[in-house]
Length: 597
Image 1 (cartoon, rainbow, N blue to C red):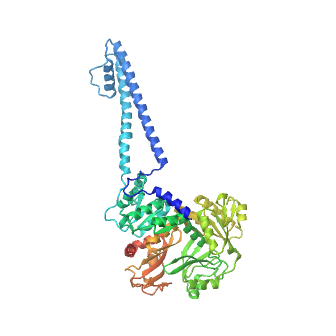
Image 2: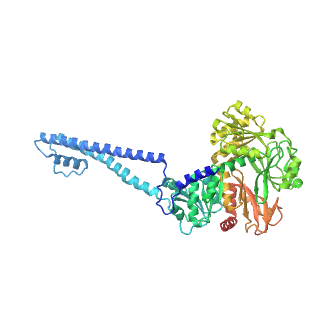
């Protein structure tokens, strides 16, 4: 371990430039560079061809001029021939030299039309291609700023662009937290600027970049590049701003220690986070609750009702609140989430979303958990970082699993692997899909995930399928394909990073569905939930009320909301944004508290 750490640190040291040294050359995309160079060559070639054609035309017309003038009995020098040709081609026509014959006059018309047509093409082309377009490109490339205003403070500095960063920026916008994205490529920065993003051009390894980004007044720097670049960012930022928080992502386990040594306050392994979250969604079957997170003093858990006496009954008939004291947040039904109401009917495929203490959930398990052999195994499709992380999480709870992987070199001795194509029925049968209670689809390609999710749903209508999504637009497609739960790097990663510098503010329940906490708005203080109609106005539902260090789940709808307390709520991203619009004071107050922390 020490040898590996030392070798990696040596590589990092080569990349770290001492403060005060000249700025590094801006990085560029090689494909973009080659495309631009090819375009410049094409333009130069076009201009060269036009210039040669122009010279040939002038020479030919001058020679014909000599011949026609000789037939009329007149003689002119070659410079005079070129002079007449150019004045005629450019339509100046001084009239000092003219033809007297019809042939000469017809030739003059030909020279006039040919020259004016050619010059109307060549001159504008040369001007546009070599003067106007480069000037416009340079102006556009410089439209993104190189620094932030002097008064900027409390902002988030993001150092990359991607789905995780976009989700993080959306969270910042909803919470009214200022942010800036540092981009090295000026063209990319310009496009993001046009899209309305707060962006700044600068090199990630240049201390002056962070000084211009007002890093000493920032709340946090988020480093989401590769491990080596993240280490360099942490070194550079820590040198300038010793007190600012640095949250970095890491792909390799060995990089965690290196990033912490470099100055990162928190290191987030997105693959591990997503894998653990997906594993949690695949458990909780057979009436047994499984915790998917802890939030605001409450344990949030899922529990399937298949095989229990709850099937076919409404929530009012089940009397779960009265029997166990657990809070019912909502019900999953094949990927569709609905808030808990007394009239909600539970089916074999229903999964409860619960909130309560460890004792309350244990009481729930003792009464409803069933011993089903189908809860003993899982199939993980994909042996990458996420798939292996799911396997480690299942090992902790003692659940057997098999990983289906096409590449034999990815197999690890600590788990059971079946090498082959997951679209092959025999491969899935060898992995135990017929007996598995949970199926995890973890490919990095959303098209593959949709295909395999639909295939597995056809093979196992009763299994719980948890799928991974890379792009937001494919989440609904995966649900339609048959997934019971869909999670992504963007949702899980942005939530983890957000909570590292904002405190325990958000818990990702599923893609686009969050538990969040917010101070009770002044408009609601003293009112009851029955009077406030929070759900009707914002589509967010109140899960608990916290006041003076005490949290009350299943809050009484007739009790006044205390001033100075906090609400624990559940809602989609749009609903959370709607809450911010309806009660803006609460989110601003939450922001001030975060900055003080």
